[in-house]
Length: 113
Length: 113
Image (cartoon, rainbow over all chains, first blue to last red; front, side, top):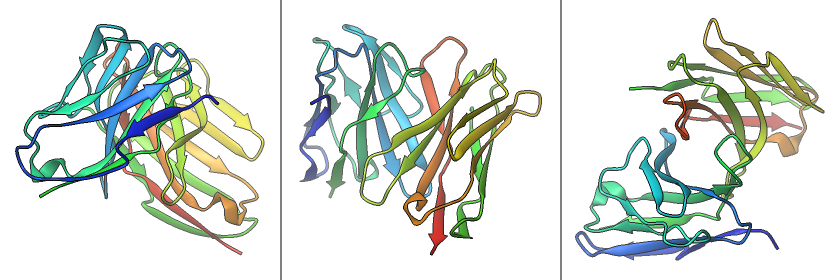
């Protein structure tokens, strides 16, 4: 089954404790992206990747890192999480770019205390 | 920075009526405009998109119109059904040739049976 998976789905952590949210897709998609969703603000793009070893900043990259060492995986890294990073995070992928249909993962709900 | 304004924030219609959601974008280089539907607790799903070389696109009960001169685009849903109830997000590409996407803040559509 074609899908985008994220882990963990729910995470409670404390300020400053490094964490990684994984994202994986099995559709051989080149384009992958991370978004955060906050009430009243909609979805905001954090980082995106056009292909292996090619990443770029979205609208709100501060406090986040990403890597794309393999085509199927695009982890989101929070080196020193802060409470303002409490949010719902979505990973998405599409075949060659955002102008193709983006398929979203199920979301990761993060609470930073 | 670039932004997308979306109105209304909430919309209530009777089953069978039409619903219209409007968005305005700021980047004159924007050339791709997707619409996403997000049901409660679910991930966003692409429902329709339009590119800047097209003025209108239809898919069954859903249509999108684009006015590049005025920098606004709209989603039209005809013959609404209770299962159309969801949050709808518009988005626009920005930054010219980049693959960045900026979203509106969402419209909560409630279709009353």
